[in-house]
Length: 340
Ligand code: 13P
Image 1 (spheres, rainbow, N blue to C red):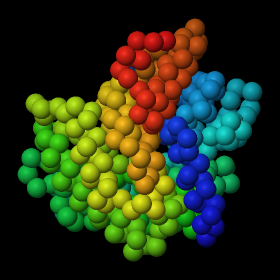
Image 2: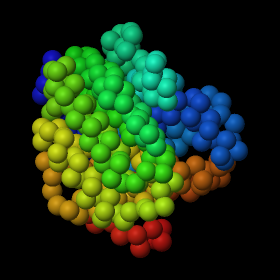
Image 3: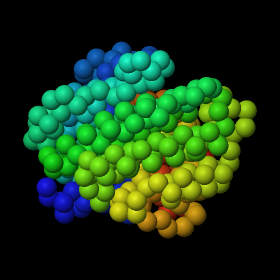
């Protein structure tokens, strides 16, 4: 295993003000996003949309990596430049979603486990040849009003994440390890902290047992945040304090970066929360973003599938990238949202 290369790539993705653009929506998910703006999801419309994202001028200042979907990593710009090549030439590391989605966990009603380990080694070899420098695997943990997630559900997901991460490193790809505790539900921030703590503890214990090199991976967790239906929502400072406390307890200092998912937070909210965490001062790891919806929602709203809106769509992406870059340094303020 080339440990130096793995740790250099992991660190490059989160260097300076950089974070990750998650553009790895599966075909059903991108269809949902396109439905919201009345655009039909076809291979050409998906290709065009991703081309608009990846050719946005200047995003390489804040975007260190882009996560692609299987279809996207094989697509090219209209003039024939493969997307992974286009990104790499701009100094952005191309990555690939390799899990095959969360399915019902047998005998544990309501819980899920992520599938995709069978044949993964061969798929990783192919993705590396297509230009990927890192991979992503998402585990989904749901909080309910009773006892879920169960300790077994957490362990099953942590085990799969660790097997994936070890395979990635063996094949020379940096694993992004994503255990997502969902924001769905009426639970308060305390319950989210309790569950996130149990999840992170299990994930790092399994990663360690699988001999994963912490220096050569990135963690993509949820923020510690109240459920969407909870009557009491917290300030960015409260979210930052609970999240950093939880990460301090369970994430080894050897991990180079934390790249949060946005998980359904509004774009401005995800930026403000990231900013509040970075305002708390330096941590052993870079505290950054790997947002899907919080980077792309304003882009989709501006684009609406119209060629005449491409400039506005790219401006919207550049703006979110810039503001999240500032949040990486604790220099964002909500007043900046009104600026162009
Ligand atoms: P969101 O930021 O929209 O949660 O997406 C991030 C992601 O990659 C989910 O797997």
